[in-house]
Amino acid sequence: MATVASPVMPRAQLILYAIPTGLLAEQCDRLFRMVRAIAPTTAQTYPPHCTLTGFFQRPENADVRKSFCRAAGKHQSDGFSA
Image (cartoon, rainbow, N blue to C red; front, side):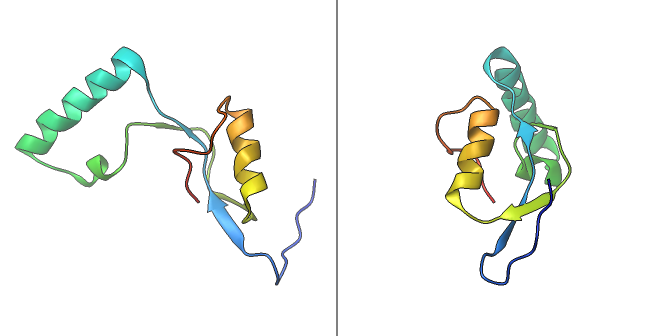
């Protein structure tokens, strides 16, 4: 597959990552709260996650985001940002 830059359609910088749920998410939240109270770091500006890709660019449109959501098993684009 090839992509061609278009002067008409802006490109979004995207990254795909997994966010923990359930017990692991609860434990991460507890750890973040404890660390924030003792010695806050820039790490707490991001949610706990596992990066699955590096940054990449694609045309900026809703269809691209919907495709990623479908690939990730989600039905809505909530939680995804460009």
